[in-house]
Length: 223
Image (cartoon, rainbow, N blue to C red; front, side):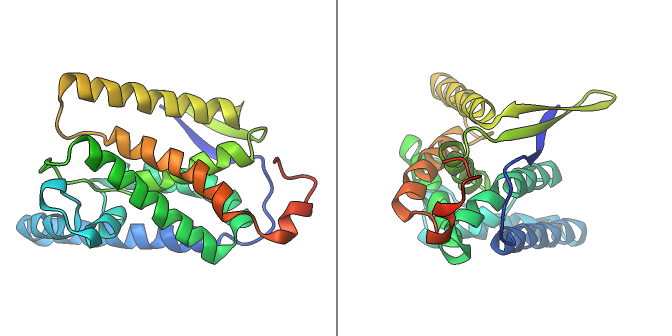
């Protein structure tokens, strides 16, 4: 198993919104865990209410589904990626603009997945589409930063990669997975097109929304 643990790009402000988003996702998952312990039917009802099912589309579910996760591996993985890449993107956008950026990326991700399978009854949950947007923004704003990766297989060791390489490789994996899911007409599993849609939206939005004025003067940022 290989996963990122930090980036070398320095930040100059506190990642307030990133921390709050992580806290919100974890608290919702703890509520899910409590429902599972008390009454599995209640958890099923909760997932039905707040997940996004294209065949039973409700606009509000685009946003509620971004805070619901399928299991503890799902939520931990997503929150790790958000923590690693979110701090730098929040740093250049500013707190309020970053929150709007995150939600718009989640919206774009959901719409991309629904465009592929608009009549699906399979629940879509998770923050990965919005986080993919954060990763897309990181790619174009900090391509020369380095990502410290951890490899685990009975033992741990770390190594680092250029951010552009790691993120392009990740995008290629999502693209291959998306093509494979269409070819096999598979239902459920990973929402690859949500990842692709969120990633592209992040690239577009970070340019459209622009960085905070003081940060244009920072020589050590990778533009």
